[in-house]
Length: 90
Image 1 (cartoon, rainbow, N blue to C red):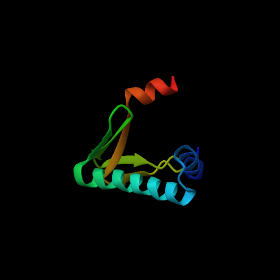
Image 2: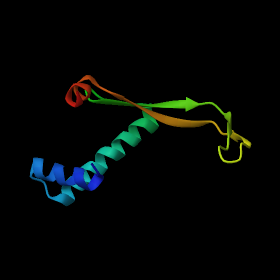
Image 3: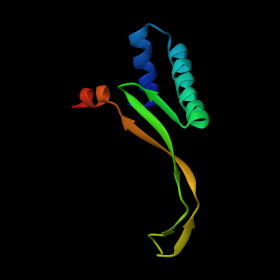
Image 4: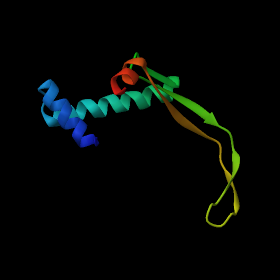
């Protein structure tokens, strides 16, 4: 499902216009980003948990040339499905 498909679904389910549904989805995504930046974790109980993780610097290899290269440390996002989501897809 693409973002536009999700916006269409949200509009149909809620009676919102597509523009309002799009703004609601953008607000939700911005809220998740803000929560991750400020607190490092966003939990939608029973559905999903987003959390930040620190990855240490490491060495990697270019698969094409085999050349060794340094990969810088960075912050990544992990996503863990909640029980309601797991049950819904099984």
